Length: 473
Image 1 (cartoon, rainbow, N blue to C red):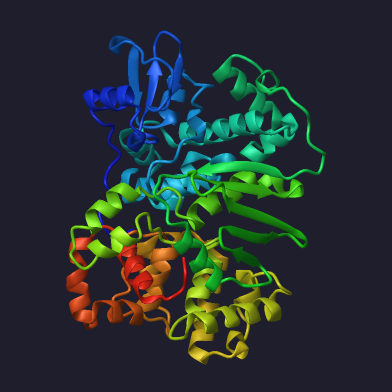
Image 2: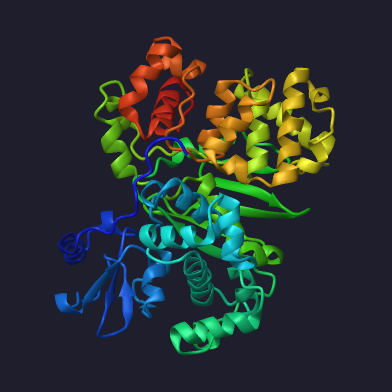
């Protein structure tokens, strides 16, 4: 991943204590407070009385508190807190492994498989996680499953077996055992009282984020690039087709709140964890706007842009291969033309869905109306993804290196894909027409101009692009 990735570091005990006493929302998601006398851990904004200093312990992540035997508070619900921003969560290797774990990699595989996937030894990866995350990979994956299960038990009336499946468990027995070991009661004891919804009601969950959040930019960006057969985007609502007839919906949960309201069709609740992870990437929900905006505002060109649009995010992609293919389709054409090409690609090679790598690996992609070399580049990406999986697309360094070997792919495509697909916060398409017009300078001097913006040049790019668009937010 490009740019500087800061290691996970728990704030000092004094800072944690002060932030907790002040209920400072800037620290929500940065650490949790465990109470020795009650065995419960809380968010720093929990309204419950603060424990005596000698009874408080602080952990960088809920997973670490769970591993030490603490239970999440039922009043402030740490499982619903914003996630720590990616740049604060460890080294490149730890971050790549964390992304895989959050995608469910360890739900049915071993830590040794995870280590192989990120190119290190199993013992080294475990040590790395312990130092940078606070727990080992398996404990982090266990906490991910348990905390999502707690949310589903608290917020829905899904059956216990459906909760287990939706949270990533491959067996109901394992879910019951882990839940009892952590909470001392069976999952059924956690169920909330109340009327039950119709059997086919969708699963509705809220995904929180830090404010400010410039929803106007995010939704307008996605709307201009939407593929009609796959996506529907209105002012503050994104819909994505799931299966043949179902639609997932992510809607801003009121302009004054800090959450997306996600509705998942009843038939697809078994993959809820995967869908929530995809949406967090797509909407860049884990960013820390206060830190990013404060840094970018020190550059005089960006200062007025940041003041005009605080909380600007970098839109991600729903799927790594899809996002990469769409980036290639958009190379050297307008946004509108790229959307038309993507729609044609879906209609010709997947009957309205987005084509799989297998469908495009040996296809005549250029037949949809694009240069031959670019069509072959799509197929080359498809072939590698088919043989290796999409892990190389999610790693910005591997993506850039891979693109350099494929004829027909230029630096703009590599940086654009690194920014949106690999989620590199420091990616910078220095030869982009919109960037150069906004800055009024050539690419060489644009690169020099962007140096002080590190490690958030991707966010600087969003501000420059927004300054060039005339679309209402």
